[in-house]
Image 1 (cartoon, rainbow, N blue to C red):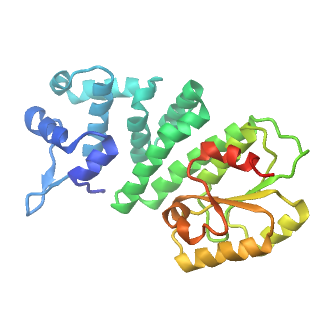
Image 2: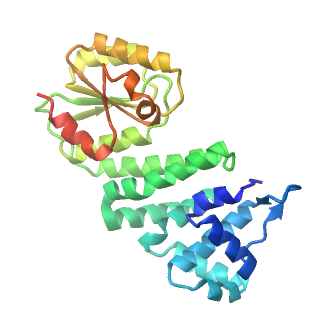
Image 3: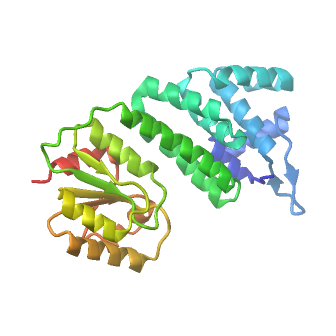
Amino acid sequence: MAEYKIKDLEVLTGIKAHTIRIWEKRYNLISPERTDTLIRTYTDEDLTNLLGVALLNKNGIKISKIADMGKEQISKKVWDLKFSKTENSSQEKLILALIELDEELFRNTLHNLIESVGLEETFSSHLIPFLDRIGIMWIVGTIHTAQEHFISNLIRQKVIAEIDKLKVPSKDTQPVMLYLPEHEWHEISLLYYQFMLRSNGVNTVYLGQSLPYDSLLLTIQKLKPRALVTSWLTAVDEKYMMNYFKQLSNDTTGIEIYAGGYQVNKCFDLISDWAREIKEAKNLTEMVESIK
C-alpha cells in the first residue's frame, strides 16, 4: 500500500495543503494516520476519496454539501462524472485511472479530450501535466512499475492510433528520421514528435526504440535524411551523452540533429555544439522546415 505525505496529495490532486487540512478538520472528508512525530500520512484510499471530492467540487457541488453525503451517494456521483465529457475534470480522472488500473476510464477520458480539443492540445495541456505528476509519484515511491507501464502503454496506443489516421506524406522531399538511442525505451515523446511532423505533411521515417548505433548509420546511408530527431528520458552519464552527440555529428556531416526529452533539456549546454534543442513539440515542424 502506498503512503503519501500531504505535499504529495497537493501535487497529485491540485488541492492546496491548507485546503486539505480544512476539509479534514471541518468536514472530516479524509482521516489521515499520524507518525510518531505527528506527521500526517495518507493511503491510496485517502487519495482516491480526495480525487472524488475534487471531481464533485469542480463540477459545482459545494464542499459542505459533499460532506453531508454518505459514501454511497458520493461514489454514485463520482461514478456518473467519471464517464462524463467534462474537460475540466480530466486530471482527476487520469489519476484515478492510474491508481485503480482502470483502462475504460483512461480510454474514455483520453478519447473525450481528443474529440474536444484535438491531440495537440490534449498532449500539451493535459497529458504532459499528467505525466509530470506520474514522475512525482514515481520519485516518492507511490506507484509501481506495473502502473507506470499500464498508463504509458495506453497513451502510446492512442498516439499511434491518431498517427494512423493521418495521410502518409509525399516522398518528394528528403525524410526526417525519428529514433531512440540504444538505451532508451520511453517513446511517447518521440511518437508525439512523429504525430506533429506527419500532421503538418513532413515526410518522416520512424525507427522507434533502442536503435543500435550501427543500424542508425546504415539507415542514414540508405535513406539520406535531411534531419534526425531523437528523445532522451532515461538518466545517463553526462559524458556519455556528450560523446554520443559529438560522434553522431561527426558521422552524419550536413544532417541536422534535433534532440528533446528531460535528459537533453536538463543539460543541453553540453551538446549544443552538435544538436538543436526541442523545447516544445509544437515548434518542431517549423524548426525542421527551416532547413535549407
